[in-house]
Image (cartoon, rainbow, N blue to C red; front, side, top):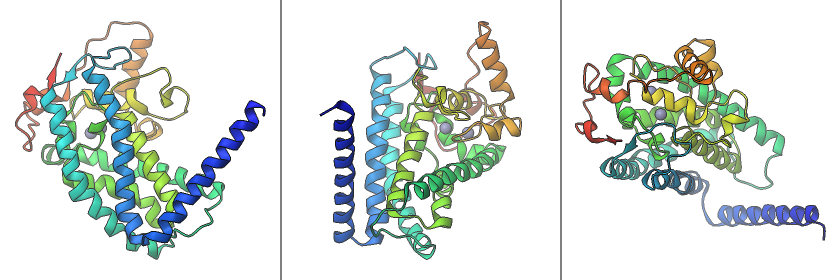
Length: 304
Ligand SMILES: [Zn+2]
Ligand SMILES: [Zn+2]
C-alpha cells in the first residue's frame, strides 16, 4: 500500500477511535460530569504533559534557544507546582461546574454526530479572537498600580517564565482568565468536542507563550499575528509600568493601541545586531514601589 494511503488509513482509524471514546463517555457520564470532571482531567493532562518538559529543560540547563540567561531556583519551581495543583482544584474545577448551566442554556450538546469541521474551525477562531480582546483590556487594567500590587504581581513573580507559570496567578486573576476563556463557548453553546478542543488549544497556546524558549519552529515563526514566547517573555522581563505586550495570543491589539512600541524598538535594535543590555526585570519593581503583598520570597526566585 502506498505511503499516502497508509497515512489516510491511520487517520481514519484515529478518527474512529476518537468517536468510539466520545460515544463511551457520553453513554456512561452525564453532561455535567463531562463538562466539569471531564474538562478538568483533560486540562490537567494537556497542561502538565506539555508544560512539564519545559521545566525539565530548564532544570537540565538547556540554554540553546532560551530567551533569558537566568533560571528559576528549585524552591521557586516547586512552589509553582504546588500552588498550581491547589488552585486548579479549588478555583478552576468549580468554575467549570458553574459554567455548565450557561453552556446548556446556550445550546451546548454532547450528542453525536460531531459538528462540521467548518463550524468547529469558525467557533475556535472566534474564541481565540474574543479571548485575546478580553484578555488585552483586562490585562491592562491589572497593570494599574493597586491591582498590580494586590493581584497581578503574583503572576509576575516569575520574571523568567517556564511554561507552567502560565497559570500561576492570584485566585482573582484565575477567575478573570477563566471568564475570558469560557466567554466564547458561553455565548455560542458549542459541542462537547469543540469545547474540549478549545480548552486544549488555549492551554497549549498559553504554555508556549510562557515556555521561555524561542525555537526556530515556534508557532510565531510561521503564524502571522501570533505573539508566542518571545513576545510574552518581553512582558515578564520589564517593570510593570513599562512592559507592554498585553495580549494573550495575537500581536495586533498591542500594535493598534501602541503598547508594543518598546518591544518593537528593542527587536529592531537586535535585528541590526546592536548589543542590548538585559532589561530591568520585574523583580526589581517588586522590591521597590510596586512591592507585592502576596509573597515575601521574590529575592530568591532567580539565579544565574
Ligand atoms: Zn502582566
Ligand atoms: Zn504571563
